[in-house]
Image 1: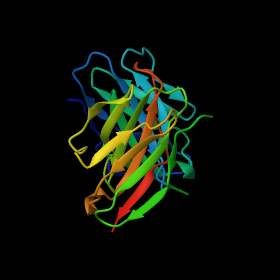
Image 2: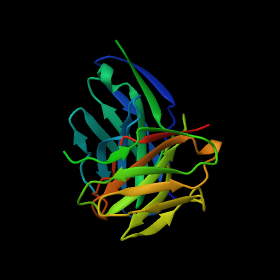
Image 3: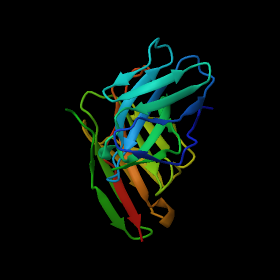
Length: 111
Length: 115
């Protein structure tokens, strides 16, 4: 069975600093997809970034990048130049038809 | 930009009542999903649906739950007799096709409150 572990229940970061949200995963599938979603206080689930297990390069989407270390089974999200609007819950997830989510990390950006 | 639409945004119901949560997936998507998030907890898979039938369901998705695609656009989740523990945010998601590079897009959710 696939599993996602997010060990940081909450983080406080000063505005404009970079932040890394940790994610490790477990799967026996040879190929898989990893995702990060953002859930603001309004509740919706917003797709941020995707990394395929066979992708040679780390995924990037604007200020978001994914630090993918396949041998260590980690897929950390890096947010550069954090903004107040980045305050939200962040979920790491792995796809096996359905999506399996981690417990999330609540990120607070301080002004 | 195409999006998944869910209605209502908030549903309040009495215990034992039936509720129907509605979703309009992205129009060219073929795979549909329901997820649930109890307040303060992680998002949990309920059911996936493809080609007019359930392809997978979790242990949460018991006989009280059913899904339907009554026409070409709507995808509904019905809870027959709601319980207090059904109070949660329910998310619909859709996927264009299989393949790791395909992204599941989520609706904004329906918050169900069972009193």
